[in-house]
Image (cartoon, rainbow, N blue to C red):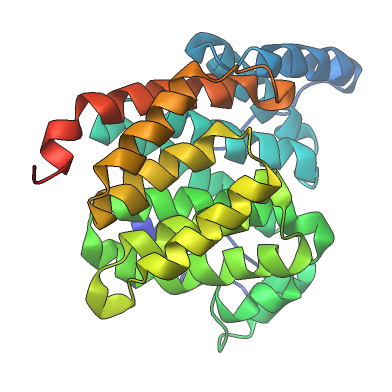
Length: 287
């Protein structure tokens, strides 16, 4: 696996004012094929609920990125696609970690398009967290999916890793909330709902705040299934509220997945996650 320091942070010997992330070089495509490649990438992306089609989309977007590394939309699709591969398709721990690690790499590239951010980091006395103030509206998708990928990767890696990278995750999601609080179906409130339930008590666990954020996200976008799954898997488990756990997950399993057609693949993945949580119920509750 690529070194975490390489994936997540600036190399110690970086030139001033640059922001580098390890990534194998990608051969650019001929300019006359860009339009065709973009159409193929978008077609495969629309079918990302199929793992093979998602992998095709990622390959196509890599070709587009090589042609124009400053295209935020292309970089964001690579970041979000690798995140979804880990979250929605992979089931084994190592495969999830590998997908989210790759997503983090693309996230750093996506964020590095913001030259004010890279300039702040280049000064040497700033961190990813303190430099988040440089991001603007156009950076929101990159910020959100980078924060989500880093958070998932860190949590699966263990509590020590989670606490180590928590300042960056929180700073990025806080900035998303400042710039676009309802981005991706109230993503910031969904994140804080999970955050306040998942962190240990010594780090500030607060189930009241957790529920408040989940309730706010659901009130804004009640049909987004991912929020209900997180409410059950994080808050209800920590609260040991089996009734809410079962109610939320059974509701997800019965909900139409086409109410939000733009994220139907993610909705279908949420239903798979709901089924998996219900199957593991005996291990999650004391009685």
